[in-house]
Image 1 (cartoon, helix red, strand yellow):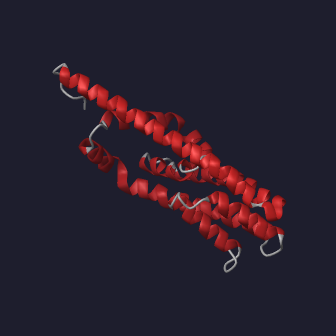
Image 2: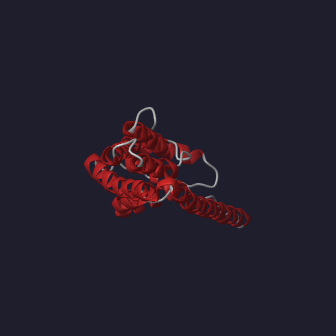
Image 3: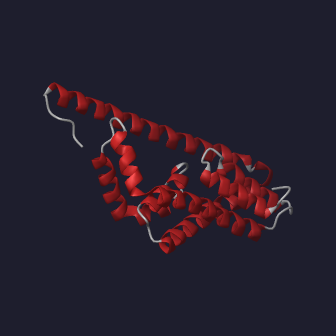
Length: 200
């Protein structure tokens, strides 16, 4: 950000969308603090970071679109403990709630990035995807930039609080995945013991 200014903040946010481990809860408040001391234009920071969010989300959307449903089904068919019917249920859910998932997903660490991939896989209309992504990203970015701007030298307190929130979300996601795998292993064992064929 010192080198490129507001465009540098936008580039960092674009990379954060593509590589979730890069934390926006550090980038955005720092951009706000930088603006508060006069080293960056506040409006430019808001615009550039939102553009960066859109660019990063678009990259993942196009990856999902390129990968496509056929490749996804072929991969899932070879995976243990995961069924094609799981994907079909997920697709049905996304068809019903996809617009809300893309918008509200912008406020959830990790999922903020990953939600773009199923949107591409399911070929959500690009105009709809861009509109929802832009709105959600603008709200998220503005909130944290303004917090950093208002807190000044204490901008790192935002990172600490949101960092804890991110860790909680990650733990909950891992617990959910673990629970799914445990349940699926139990189901497979019971079907084998009963002499039933495995579900597709």
